[in-house]
Length: 425
Image (tube, rainbow, N blue to C red; front, side, top):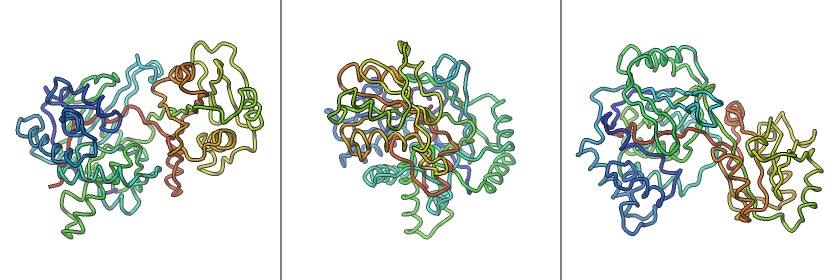
């Protein structure tokens, strides 16, 4: 992997909580407008610039991109985003606090290195992906990068963990952090250090040069867009040494990442009664009804190939029968594949998870209680909870050149936007 340090553009430490925001794609325009209300320093004014129009305009309206640039210039002029004088690497730590159900009862921290990732590593497949991207979403992000000439938000990479990098990061994190705060509304802690020691910077670059691949954990569209703009500028100038050959990434060791479940809710039983549906499910799964399911989290899937089903006010445990899946196939082993083939397609007639309006998806951060609520409300008829995929499964699929089925992975915490910006000059 070819990486480089860069002159990050960052908020002064006393303003970081006001400037930083959630990523552009985890909330809609109305939610972003509400979160930014009364805060002229919120990064949403740049990454969700449609909120600056009254009434709101469409997020893809041609007016939003010049507005984003105008806001970015305002932030720079006001001193809300200030460029570092030297090229640095940075450490960005995210902590799920012990009070959060995702933590397992104690603080859980993952430590990422903030770097400039090389465009050619993406174009030539050394930065590996596991999801398909949509061209319209890519083009939207490319317009944003082109207009601002900057990567406003980082992408989220995983790399095969290295003890020598762990040791460097541990040493850096013994110093006083540049930023350290808990962000609403999720309540995750965000801590940030600057690496400005030249010898340490050189050593990090050297270690990454011996890492054969990195993996996109979150941010496939942002990665495609950032690399796409870099490739455009390469072609136009022939310059492979300029800053635009790199884009903003936070790289985490693969053994620290937290992947949670990504669940399904369906509006109807495809013309079947509840009894007929369960009878068909029993052909491929061993079914057990939970006698006491008052605590929805108590019925979470226990292991790979075990599912939880909510129907008619009851939770059921489903375990796929032998011979219904292929553990030797990186796609066939996935529980999203098993549930899609044997329940959603075979029984419910849902062929395309991307386009079928009868199905919706619920990130595990909302808990199984959200699945139960949506069925009990009458909005949905049945809910299916899945055991989360592992980082190793993602790596196996990316290494084999395969693509995961839609709505498979949910990484948490999400990267906080506004801690650092990378300009392409």
